[in-house]
Length: 289
Image 1 (tube, rainbow, N blue to C red):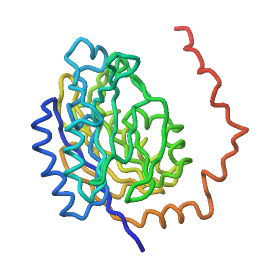
Image 2: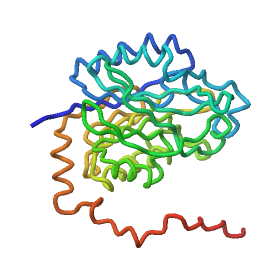
Image 3: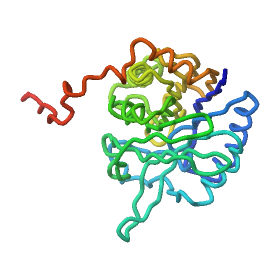
Image 4: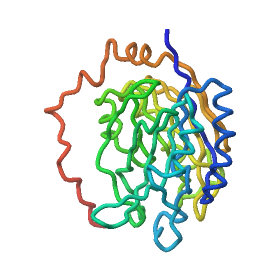
């Protein structure tokens, strides 16, 4: 039996990159002491997230870094034999112009393993970032893995695309805030807190794989983040979880065996009826009034 220990982080990461790079060794060392093989840090680990979801361009944007820059290299050196996923605001050059993406990076001491650029940009996020263009899995020392960034997990097609590409684990990195339109006195009762957990469990159960879900905590600008990092098994059951405060959710499993067992009789990927689905039909327009 070959087991993998998965860790999902709930923590606050702000705009000060030097402070973050000084904070990360403690988090990674704590995970290493607990035997973690795969560590999933939140979206916007390096540089922090937006201050406002509706008009982000009215505020200073998070500092952007290069994929081959010293910040990513520093985390890779910290990772050593661990697989570490973390979020950045990526600076890129396209057509002679500088653009930025909300990006998830997966590293190991041996190098850069995978990159995912957030595809689904909610509310005003498109003022700050360009959208990515797809969902792919990639090979790592802990098996075949895919990544999503917060709002991506709202769409079943995102996780399904990764599962069809052979992933047995999905790392979902989030900077997922509490509701900004219907605030609750307690985070655990917040509407977005319910959806955050619901999507994690649904994506795992639909695709019969593991979901390792991280999130930011605390307050940044006008946003209050939920925490609720977790590991979800192929049956959609939460097997390790933090709450609203910072923490590390850890679970150990024989990932390949558990995924195979979940799919032995009812295999959701095998039993699809592709010709019955219409994925290109336009969404219905809003009814008058």
